[in-house]
Structures are given as structure tokens and as C-alpha cells.
Length: 102
Image (cartoon, one colour):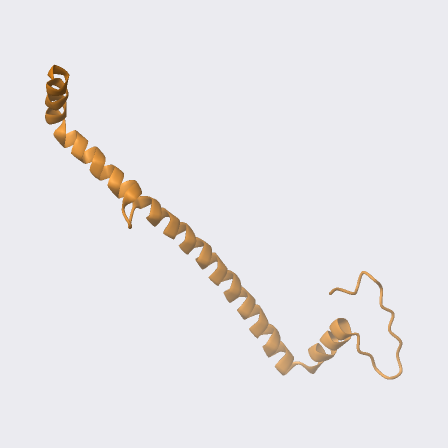
């Protein structure tokens, strides 16, 4: 019983410190909105923002190419020749294996 009284006196003497430690552990690890969870959300947000930036750049590039095709008929011919291997009636096309991409 003497050991229990000594333990109780120590706990009672450091009750504020123990309370702060328990509260801190709950906030950092166990709460639904814990600091760990917030850090994970922040990493997710950064990854999604990078993905948005990637698709925005891809959209701008596609829009630029579409506008180029709408204005310039030579660019349509160039793309038809390069991508679809089209030709004029009186010319021959030689396709190398390195040129074919799937």
C-alpha cells in the first residue's frame, strides 16, 4: 500500500504534465483531425495540384494545336503525312521502322 501512495503522490504532483502529454498524444495521433491526418491531406493536395497543372498544360498544348489546324491548312497536310502516312497521288512513301510509333 505504501508503494501505491508514493505513486499517487508523484502522479498528483505532475498531473498537469501528464494531462498535457495525454492531450498532445490525442491531438497528434488519435483524433479524427489529427496532425498526422492533416499532413497526409496536405501531401494529397500537393499531388492533386501537380496533376491539375499537368492536365492544364496538356489542355493548353492541345488547344494551341487545334487553333493551328483551324488556321493553317499546311499543318493539316503535315500531320496527315507524318502521323497517318498519307501521300499525294504521284509520290512514293518510304516508312522506316523507327518512324512507326504505336
